[in-house]
Length: 276
Image 1: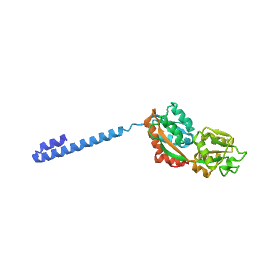
Image 2 (image 1 turned 180 degrees about the horizontal axis):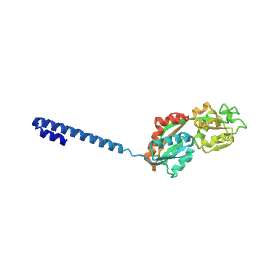
Image 3 (image 1 turned 135 degrees about the vertical axis):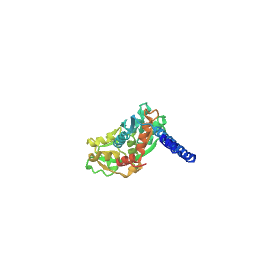
Image 4 (image 1 turned 180 degrees about the vertical axis):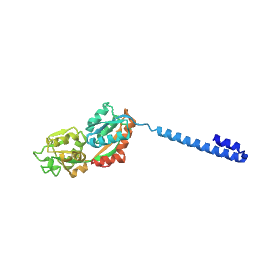
C-alpha cells in the first residue's frame, strides 16, 4: 500500500483520481476487516464445541455387548483421546448399581421397566430415548437334535431348558410369551442375564434357552435358532440415557448421539436389532 501512495505522489495524479484511489483502499480495508471478523467468529464458533477426551463409562444390557463394543471402537476413532469402557450385565443388576451410586456416564437398558428404576431414583439426566427393539428366539443345540419347533415343545419332559431370571428383561419377556400361550415351563435354571442363559446351551449344559434373536445371531454355529410366533407379543424396547452426575457428560451425550445416528443404527440392525 505504501508503494501505491508513493507512486501516486510521484506522478502527481489529480485530486479526483487520488480520491477514487483512497475510496478503493477504504473499501478494500473494510472488506479485509469484515473477512477477519468473519474468520474470528468462525473460530469462536468452532471452539465453542469442546474437544472430547477422557474415559466414558457405559452400563449396557448384556445383549448389547457385540454391537456396543463395535460402536465403542468407532467412537474412539472419531474422538482421539477418548476411551470407552463398558459394564455389560443384566439390566436390573446395572440399574441397582447405578442407583447405589456406581459412577457411570450412560445407561442402556433392555426394557423401560428397568430404566424406570433409574429415572424414578432421579439418576437419569433427561428423558430416556428408545433406540432399538429386540425379539425373543429359542436357541437349541447345533442342528436342533431335539426337533424343537415351537414354544410348546420346550415343555416336553426330559428337555433341559434355561430361562433368564424373571427380574431380567429377557426373562420377563419369556414369561410374557408363555403366559400369552397358556403354557407353564419349569426350567433347569434361571440365569442372571441373557448371555449366561445362552452359554448353557453353547456348553451343552442345556438343550435349549429362550434368548434374544441378537444373541442367537452372535453365537453363530454354536447354536441353532428357532423362531416362535408368541415372541411378537413380547418385544422389548431398549431405552438409553445420560446419567446424573456423569463424570464425562459431554462424551456421554456424544456416545448416545452415535448410537442413535444412521451409522449406529446400521451396526445395531446388522446385529439383529429392530428399529424403534
